[in-house]
Each structure stands twice: as structure tokens, then as C-alpha cells.
Image (cartoon, rainbow, N blue to C red; front, side):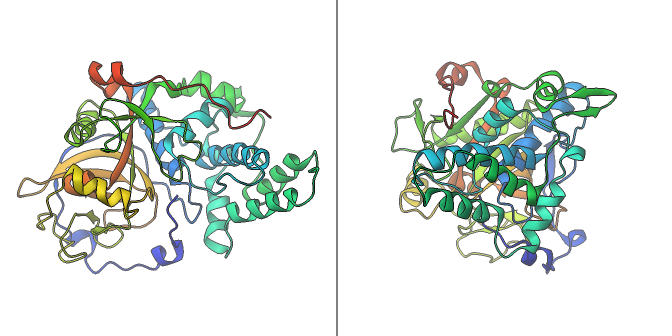
Length: 377
């Protein structure tokens, strides 16, 4: 997803320390477990969606289970590789993806607690290596395609190359005294259903209250239906989700004017970038559906990064903020960020929300997700 240099993150020294920050007053913050670091893996989609699933387990069963994000990423690599080979190298192959990809992959392949397939190995490699895992894997796939017919055992070679770097996941493991496979762990412990979630957006190039496939690179199959709603309703849905006790994921641009979470902890829709970013009551520009659409259609707004939204807050002067549990690395708020309503209105490409957080109106409008396979293999 977001191409970020972890080494630079780790060397950051914020000009304003955590203790000196002006912190908006929390209205509601949901239990969300500890912040996990993604390194240069570009798998924020898995970290954020996994965090959302973990928060629901905390909410429903009072269990804080640390789930392996890299197991989900491994399995999406496999599915993307199948698609890439069958399309003769014409489809997108990289680490980026979206929440609905994570939801689909967890249902198909299951899940593993992190202790049995630790994120730290792949994250450590990503921080040390000049070439990232997805590029290494793509080079392998391109070498497979150079000779036709292709080698029938190419997939085994692909998996071997991945696992040599990220580790081999167990076929079975014992957790809390019981043996599981990844699939039985998902079904019996997580009790997970991807159809329990809806992805919602707001753009004017499709009719409101319709479902469509959003035209962004990481929606690489262009198959996932997004429910399109007016912008004010998108914001209300996001606020109501937290108010009703459900975290959600946000697909957001962080290269636009005003994102400065790594240094100040804030994302603000400022007139001049980085002008007063340490102050949540900094004056922001007005946001409208028209500005949002223009920035999207001119490719200024991009699907850079996915984050788990875990709370809502207000500044001293009454400005509204979403509290983000981020995976990019150290921040002044120890891995949490504050994203203003104005920044959300311009730069939140979509949100993925548990259905239980939605009004019946939106449940009736949301199209059922089609069954899908990345390939027939």
C-alpha cells in the first residue's frame, strides 16, 4: 500500500514531544490492543483489518488475540500470483491491497496467532533490505513467464521463495490447550464471516445509494462493490460506528496537504501544509464533494494507506477528530493519530464497517458481496 521508508520513520525526532502535545479530549475510544509495526512490508491493509477483527473479539469475548497479519499477506500473495500468471503478467502484483482482500483471504485460508507465524521476521527483512518482498516475488513470476509453456510446479517455487524470507507457517498449532489448523481457528475461535462487513465511499461519478467497483489500483480485480453515499452521510456513518462500539478501517490519502502524523500526530486540511500542525485548532479549509471529486479525478488523492479507526475526539474549540491506530511506526501519540473531520472529508477514500454498526437503510442498500476467486487453481 503506502510506500514509506521505515528507516526514516525510526530516525524521526519530533520537534514537539508527546508530553507537550495538545491532545483533543476523547469522546470515546474503543479497546484495540497494542499498536503493531508494519515496517516496509506495505501491508497496512492486513494490519488495519486484522486490528479491526481483534477489536471485535475484545468487544464480544473479552479476548485480546494477537493475530498474524503476515499470514494473511502471504496468502494474498499466493492468490495474486495465480492471477498474475493466468493473465500473462498483465494484472497488478505488489504488496498493496484493501480491507475486503484481507476479509476474503481470512475466510479462505484461515488465521494464525502471531506467536506461530511472527510478523517480526518479514518486518525485519523489510527494514533491512533494499528490495522488498513483493518485488522479489514479482521478479520470480516474470522469470516463470519467460518460457512457454510455463513450468507446472511454478507455484511451489513461488511459495518456497516467499517462505525462505518470511518463514513457513504451521499446518497445525496448539493454542490454549487445543489443536487447530488456520481454518479451524478462524471458524471456531474468530467465528469470522466477511459478509459481516460493508465498504462505503462517496464520489459523484457514480449515483448515490448505488454499488460500484471503485477505480483505484489496489482494487485490482475491480470486483468489490462499494456502497456510494453522500459525503455528509459517510462522515456520519463513521462517527456512528465508533459511538455504537465498532471500530472500522479507513483507506486514506496521506500524501496530500496536511498529513503530518509522523511529526505532530495530526492530519489537518490546512491552507498551507505543516503551518500549525501541532495545534488541533489550526484553521482548516472547507471541504465539499466537488473538491473531493476534483482531487480524486486529477489523481491527487490516492489510496495510500489503511488504518484502524478506534475512537473519536474533540479539540478545545470543538473540532471533531477520528482517533487512528496506525501501523507505520513511532508517532508523538505512541502509534495513535488524530485525523480531523475536514481531512476525512477530502481524503478518506472509503471505510470498511461492520454491518452491526449500520442503520437498516444502508444494510438494505448494500449489495451482497459476490463469491469470488482470484484464480481457478
